[in-house]
Image 1 (cartoon, rainbow, N blue to C red):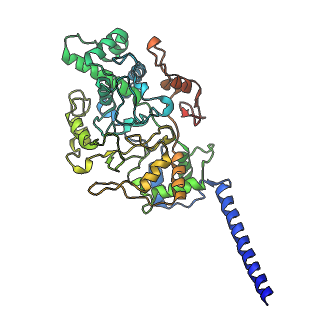
Image 2 (image 1 turned 90 degrees about the vertical axis):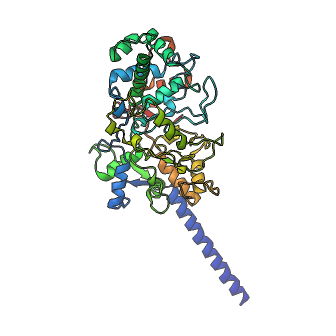
Length: 446
């Protein structure tokens, strides 16, 4: 009798172990199988499809260009070509060692890969944001203290943390090296003692740089092609894009009203609402006021949308006219960044605190919450595998830069050509062209 009981227990244990073994093998097969989801196989509701369409880059979903509102040269190829030369020119700095490209490397989606940009003078207090797609934001810098690309460029030229030049020094350089380019676009350069005319010429230099940066558009990634297949906007000859089950699960978490709620801030084709949010990410100064100070600065900025140097009508400056200011909730609030090309733009956040995207997601899962602090997010409360799914989806937004390769190389300007070997190596060999013309995709081997 006792022997029969032992046999029954042994049989039961064997059955349970066999069941668990089959279950584990099934899970492994599911996670490591082709792990692909053919577009259309996943069931999406009409509301979800509409939301996915609003997030995808497509010819029918182009974001508005704020640069064109205040910069009448924003669409000028000649202005962009002039700005391109200026962008890579190290002579456009007091030391002769710093160009715009010193902190905005094409191979890193126009960031620099550093926690804080190290200029020739001293480290800057914040991480370098990407310039790709920046023309579609009403605010520039992490605190939004400029409201156009050209006014952002002008601040960098004068800032002791960046180029450290005076306006008259900038114009003297233009006279010496770029007189023909400048005067073909903007007319005669001013006399050295005409401060008002120098201010106007200085503005024109910024608008040329802004015209160049405005060309740096994000290219569609796998997510965008997946959505195009779902909504039937792909060319009939184009292959249907596939997302893995893990990526699909991450996408569902991203747009969920209950779990992720990511899309409440990261929306539109650039995955940003261009607003300012406080999420308590520590900075190294401990006293960065963020948007609270940025709002004050942009209103005082002589080069803002309402200023005399702007090409905009007053009614087009609604973002500045109705700006939110003097609100304690703006303290330590920073601009919601784009989520495109994330694999090229580490480290992350305004302070460059997180070296990996996984670190960012873990912080969002359990953000710093202190008594009395205003916090614009709620903890994600996701399981580790859900965070991995979310990260996998975010990688499908990598598409590179939708611009001809020539705009990513230092121009042939002689000795002032920016000589950073990493950028030169990347622009000469590290970019890959997809089948469609006029598109450059940043290599993932980076």
